[in-house]
Amino acid sequence: MIADPSTTALLAWLTPALTALLLYGLGQGLVKRWIGEVSPARFCLYYVFATSLVNFGFFFSHSHPSLLAPDGRQFLETGILAYLFDGLAWILYFQSIAAGPVAIVGTLSAAYPALTVLFARLFLHEQLAPVQYLAVALVIGGCAGLAYSPAGTDAATSSRRWIPLSLLALLCWGTSNTLIKYSYTFPEASEVSLALCSSIGGAFSLGVFGLIKGRKGPHTAKAWLHSFIPMGMMAGGSLGLIIAARYGPISIVSPLVGAYPVVTLVYAALILKERITRGQYAWIGSIVTGILLCSAFAQQ
Image (cartoon, rainbow, N blue to C red; front, side):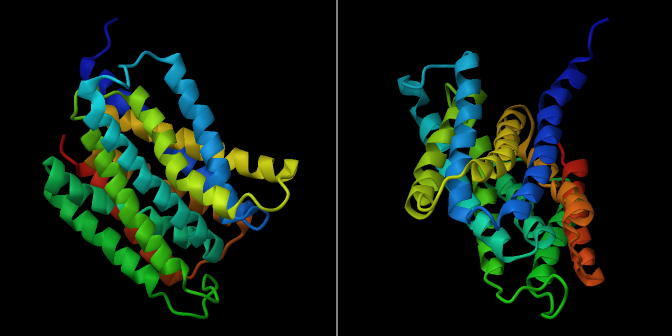
């Protein structure tokens, strides 16, 4: 029996995208669970180690164009730039999740697909379905609602420092996702080579930050375990995004992967016992609905 080419093409990006969604959602929940034992800077340092193991393993086990090929210079530079933005987003994210409730911070940061959809239309000329404009409005409106949620609720924190941190992470991830897709337009582009760009960009952003802020203090076996498990999940999710972006339109892939707060919400409610107000659940629902509409109605 011959497989339908359209089905094969769909699975080429849908499978890694759904895998990334699951791994990001679970990894985010575990980060919040253990963030009190491991500092945000230490998580950044461990994340570089985890992604390097995953990405170098993928790089050396698959064929790829030469990174030194003259024609591949633009791809290499754009790929590294994309992951410099990605690394900065992770730095902001780890600091915001330490200060705010995971269900809200995680969902707010995950609203970057709204920006990715807009950037993809403006700079990559990917066509939007009309309903995506509504979806983008739902995501942005949900972000504004969460940012101005009233103090004194169960999800409130003593400091609102997490709000600008989350919003900046959103902007950096939107930029990064757009550059990832853009890098595939250059000669010698390869998802295998982009995995290596991920580690290079991460080393110059997360790695530097982690070495400066996170190397002090004991590196216990427990700290390594409680960081490498979620960081390994995050690294696997990042690789899934790289592969999915290679074969699918970023205006679909990014919103689909960005729906991982659904997984985190289940984890936060069942395991972390976090309590969120009805109003905040409504804003979260607005964001998740917008993310899913972006994915469901994006045109290829």
